[in-house]
Every structure is written in C-alpha cells, then in structure tokens.
Length: 323
Image (cartoon, rainbow, N blue to C red; front, side, top):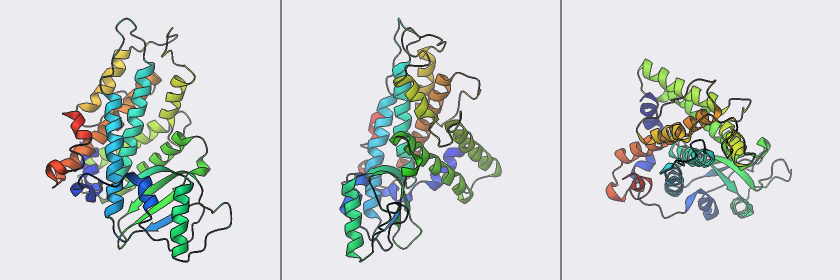
C-alpha cells in the first residue's frame, strides 16, 4: 500500500469537499476568463493568476468524473470469444483507453492536467492580457497557439495559479504529447514524495513503484513515455502481435489478458508481469491495469476523506459505476 499511502498525502485537498460540479471542465474554465494575466506569454507558455481557487477545482472535478467513469466503463465486462481464445485485439484497445482515461484522471486528482487548446481559448487569454495591458509577444516561437498543453494548478501562492505549457515541441499526435505530460507528472510526483510522512521502507517501496512505472512507460526506446500508445497503434492500426485473426505468432490467450485488467478492480495497484522478456501484450495490459487500479484507489481515498456525503462529486460519478 506504500504508493497509496503516499498518494493520499499528495492528492489535491480541495477535492475532498467538492460537490457535484457545475463548471464544464478545464477547457470551459479557460474560456470563462476568471483569472488574471500579469506577464506576457513566453515560449508558448503562460501563467494564469487566480483570484479564487473555487472555479479551477470545480473544473478539475468535472474532468475527473468524466475521465474516471470512461476508464471504468472501458475496462468493465471485457469478454473473451469462447471459440477464438487468441482473439485479443479489442481487449488491448479497451485496456489502453482505460489506462489513458485513468491517467488523465490521475493527473487532475493531483492538480495536473493535459488538454487541447484551440483559437477560442487563445483569444480568451489574449483578451485578459489586453485588459491588464500586458503586451503580447510578436515572435512566433513565443506566441500562444492552438495545440496540446500540459497544466498545473499551483496552490502555494496567494490564491493560486495555473501554469500552461505548450507541448508543441514534442511532436507527434495528441496521445504522444499526452504521455509526455503524464511522464512529467510522474517525475514531479516522484520528487514530491519527499514531502510525505512515510517510514523508510514505505518510502522506498513508493519510490520503487513510481520508478518501475516510469521505466515501463519509457521502455523500448520511448523516452517520452508513450510505449502504451505505441502498442495500441501496433494493434489498432498495423494489426500486429497476432491479436487479430489468424493470430499469427500469438501465444497469449485472451482470458489471461482479461484476468490482468480485472485485477485493477480488486484493490491496490501492483505489477503482476515483471519479467521484461514476457510478451508485449501481457506487459502492456498489466501496465494498463496498474494505472486503472491507482486511479480507483485514489478516487476512493478522496471519497473517504470527503465531508460532502452523498452530494460529493465522486458519489454520483465513477463510484456509482462500482456499486
């Protein structure tokens, strides 16, 4: 339980008393322009200063409900075809999306996020900058532009701030950029473990868990952390690994993969396939299961610590799917 013991100390505390959100997520929060801009954007990055933290927390809560619910539904009731024991294509794809949604939810549970920004959002930020008479950059390398951004809600200033960082330089598609943002979140999480009150053995186990997760996501020459996305692409688009008929070279039965993903609903996250020589389908599904289990445990911890009772935002959200 060491990772969960550490996690519950780093979860965004303001979520504990959050009731069912009315604000429709981080993207809508940016459009609401309920923030200040006091410095010109630099290198396509910008800091949004808050007059109150209520709205951004509510926006994060809304996204957590959506992403965690999608993660759960993607992994629930996955079935093998009785007459085709090696048919695993859709199991891999559903496992991947369960992990992708779970990872999005995890980031927000700790005050981080990754989102797409379009011209409407850029215009809203520019409008606020003009209001505060902040000059906008003319250099194309510094201008805000549409694309994928990572974000972090910082709570150690007076009323907090949200820092947006462009992922344009990462290249690739939205999923590759997302997993880079998630890797950066894990790097920050690993650093923040030093703030947790844990025994020496608990700290070592927590650090070891995060280190192993990072090495898993970055394996096979994927330093940006997008290995799971590459496995999904190889199955979904290139029809590799024998996941589809006629299952050439595939020796992994679908039921084995289903058992791996089903374990995510049974309690604390743990890696079950630790042999680097195990086949990629098993290793990727195991990693997906780990991310889902971590998210589920974190959601439950927030709910347990809440004072909102039945009106807490998680009760009618993802937790309703687990009853």
